[in-house]
Image (cartoon, rainbow, N blue to C red; front, side):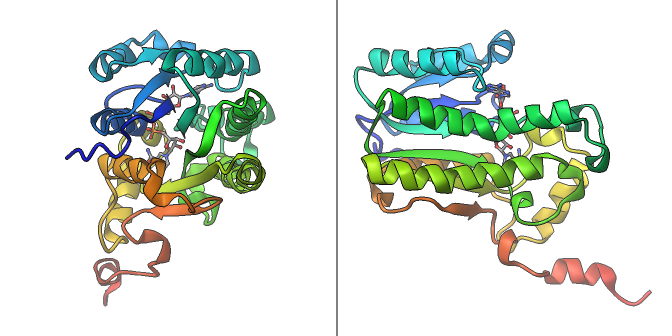
Length: 271
Ligand code: NAI
């Protein structure tokens, strides 16, 4: 359902890889709600080609950028302002990748070169994006920036590996930059801590299927689907949430504040 809540707003959406991606759903919803935006992803993801379908569907331009590369970000931000015809009102950072997870390295035996890459791609890229936007004064007053996080930033989920450390850093960057950008330009910056969701990045985590079932049973409302996450992003990009900033917002069906549910406890009955 469209209410044109983002009519006239301009955005940059990072991280749409395929139709399962959370960013893909955000792009579809933002288009339905009247926004115009640039789609971006790492050049390697571009070669897979699927993003072109999304660009056609949403009538948007693709500008490739490796989010860890400052030159790419400079080009992305300046060209986006130029092509969209004005300052940017919203940014979605929907990026995550851990070479340690990919290569099956245990947390206690992480390769530190990989570890640095995890931090750079999954967290520091958010700082770099915000710093680039600030340098070019590319964001509108009351603009809204969101990055996607996961509850492993606060609690231990062993197989989430070094991504947990990256998410903690990501959430901290949202608070710190949220302060500075808030004072300077009234830009709001938040993270959304999303339920486990079946996507390419999600499926990279060991034991993901079991884990998603556990999470479903531990959440009074069930796991939040990707489309519902997209709706939440739209709400936060809109003018109806102007004073929400520097928050980590759980979008998880109640998982974060549930100690146990009846469904789970019943699995531990008399032997
Ligand atoms: P996805 O695999 O569809 O998206 C990850 C994106 O990161 C891809 O588009 C990939 O190309 C991009 N990326 C990787 N390296 C990059 C780089 N150097 N520069 C630019 N882009 C780069 O998976 P998903 O699940 O949609 O992930 C989006 C975000 O949501 C990530 O931050 C992820 O950690 C987060 N998240 C995912 C959950 C899940 O269970 N799927 C749960 C909670 C948060």
